[in-house]
Amino acid sequence: MIAISSNNVVLPDGVGAYTIFIENGKIVDIQANPVHDSNIDYRDYGDWVIMPGVIDPHVHINEPGRTEWEGFETGTTAAIAGGVTTLVDMPLNSSPVTITVKDFEDKLAAAQQKMQMNCGFWGGLVPGNDPHLKGLVEKGVLGFKAFLTHSGIDEFPNVTEADLRKAYEEIKGSNLPILAHCELVSGDYGQELAAEPTNYAAYLKSRPRKWENDAVRLMLKLAEEYNHPTHIVHLSSIDCLDEIRAAKKRGVPITVETCPH
Image (cartoon, rainbow, N blue to C red; front, side, top):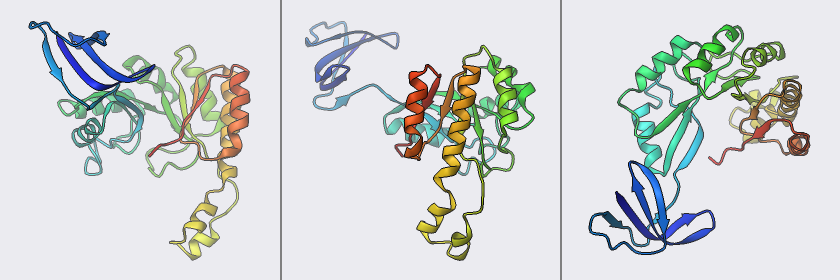
């Protein structure tokens, strides 16, 4: 057994001086009393903070295929150095993208002996890969990421409402969420940006919040219709918050994140 203590242990009810007892890699007890048992491997960390590890469910590792951008070894090492102990890897930016069982197996093979922490994986949802979704569910992906506008990666095209409906039908009963990058492109707002490519205000105008609002409303509609867990990634438009709150109160299985980074 190992015991670690600190004057700044973060617990659900506050921060204080505690000793944490760990056996076979699991916390078995937390006490306010110091350790006096010579049979226990005791480590006192003084005023250092001891807290639960951070879970980051939105990470792009890019391996295999674009490892020079970031790979499992460097990505997980940097994350754990910053207090992240679990991450979930996104299905795009790697090559191949993770949209079939074979792609997922390639990614798992690429990650062998390189990860410094716990790691889960999202599967990808693109037009035409609905026959592969059940196989990915069986392989252990945690859910499916989709883009409603161009992802920036040509191998990972955006889905339509029809594609999303096929996906909801395919993974019905799995309880695995569909994650959506919410932008539905309509109209041309890029004229100013084309004229001034380094103008940040022009860039913001080129991606109007209407695109995001329209896409969020589509996902709210589908989540309610299919009664299936649905997640809005990196929300940036405040306009949708009241509609999301109202949907949650109605029991719609919807969740939403903003990006702290």
